[in-house]
Structure formats: C-alpha cells, structure tokens
Image (cartoon, rainbow, N blue to C red; front, side, top):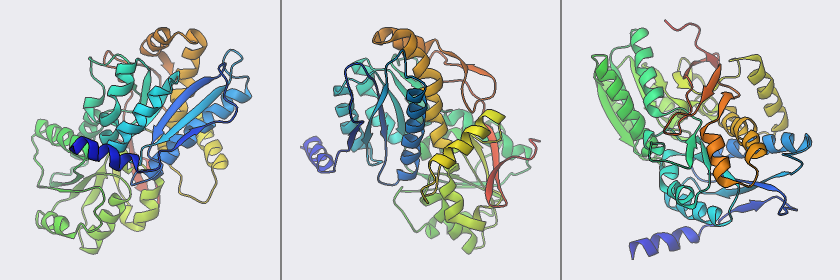
Length: 376
C-alpha cells in the first residue's frame, strides 16, 4: 500500500515531457532528465540549457550523418520518488540515449531503469560513489565522484593549515556521501571533524546546528549541500559571528550561491569540476553560453558545461559511429577517449564507467568564482 501511495502521490504531479516539434523516425532522440522544479531547479535548468545549446549547434552544422538531434526532457521535480517514475516513462519512449541526471538521491532512485532497459545513460550532475560501479553496463558518469572531490578538499584544507574543521551536511545522498568521503579523507591525514551536524534539504533555519558548531570553535566549516540551503547557512553563520572559512565541493559551484550569500560567501574554498578560466576553449564557450541564456535569471554554467560536453564530445561522435546500433553505441561510449570540454588534457572512462578528471580548486573572491591563486 505504501508503494501505491507513493506512486499515486507522484503521478499527481504534472509530469513534464517536452518533445521537440517535428520529431521523425529519422531523428536521433536524446533523453534529458533533471529537476526543473523543486529545490534543484537552478541546477536542472542549467542542464537543459546545456543540452539545448549543444543540439542547436550540432543541428546547425548539419546534424549527425544528415540526421537531426531532438531532445525529450523530463522534469523529476528534484524528488527521488518522482524521478524514478519519470525515468521509467522516459525509457519507455526508447530514446537513443539519455544524458542528464542531477542529484545523487534522484539518480540512485532511477538508474536501474536505463540499466535494465539497455539504454546508454551518461550522468552529468550526481557525485555519490554508488552511482557508478563495475556492475554497471549502461550507466556512465562525466562528473567526478564525492570520493575524489571531498578527498582533495580534505588535502587542500590541510595544505592551508586549517585544522579545526566542522561539517554541516544535507541528509540526502549527496550530502551524506560527501560527508563520509570527507571524514574518511580527514582520518587518513590524522584529523577528525570538530563537529558534525545535518539538516534536511527543505530546511530554512540552521541556527540550532550552527550553535553547536560555534561551540566547537572551527577555523573551517565544510558545507555539503546545495542551493538554496547553502547560502542561507552562510548568512546565518556570519550573523552568529562564526568566522570559519567555508569549504565544500561541486554542489556549491552555482552562481545562485553568490547571489544568495553575497559577502558571506567571500573566501569560500571548493573543489569544483568546471571553471571558465581552465583554458581558452572553455572561456569562449562560457561567453557564448551566457550570451545565449541571458534571461535575467541566475545562470549555472558549471552544470550546463557537463551536459553540453557529454552531448557534443561523446554522444555525437558515438552516434556518428554506431547510429541505431544500441550495443555499438554503448560500446563506443565505454571505449571513448579524447578531449572533453572543461577537462584538462585527454581523458577516458574507467572500468566502472567513471570519467577520469581532476578536481579544480576554486575560491570565491571579490564576489565571483575564481581559480585558487595557488595550490600550496
């Protein structure tokens, strides 16, 4: 009965399935799943913007072997139960492949559907280590894992001389996974968190947790969460005169963090997966992205670039090679190697389907995300 209740509740939501007009049997169809509503809307919107940008450019250049790319977009509402339902609906439409996925809890809830249906799925926005394993056959990931990001964050804090480190994390799969990876890395360095507190994604008042954190007298506060909670935590911490340096991973790499936290975010250190100053190509892409998506809303290029690159640099070459042969398409993705936009040097997928790429150390300086001045 509980399952029936969950399904009924989720179906009551408006299930958004957007199919580009004029889709024909000759088109290649790319499914995109992301949260366009709910707590992850700013991240989900960026994924869709990246997909739309890639498809516009590919189609304007003649498509793939003379065939056009079309998108089928589903909104999972940033909720795990709903995400499973809309992914099941998406795979029933038999797209050629799926590129998307934001939020570790959502992706963990739905990744069995493409895996069991034999549809290649490239994940661009979920970092929990359990998402890609050697048991996967159809699921791949282009964003780095919590183990890598949080592990490097721990090492960077040690290099900076930060020793009393408190942690506040979302209880969801992303926040808990990052916490576990970070604490494990701290332990390997001979350190232990001064305090660990948690919260729910929809919480707005973090003062009880921050009061306990203030008592631990930290010189760094690791925030493993996303917008909108993260900027609220920063503002409330500063209002309580907690002066610890904020640190975190890719969930904080969202322009909405700076827009919401303002001066409170100054000095934040994070291990990210994108920065527009990594190389000239990604700088030029960032300028195009901002020009094409100037809608007055806060933009999140960090999410968009993974989606764009996964389509342009991986999906399109493999569609050219394998066409409608789904097994060949899967094998092409698994064996892909080359230059991925935003990643330094050549890269490839490992045995588990995880793309190898180094974290990018970033800090908030003068109200913007900037490359860390120097890595000690």
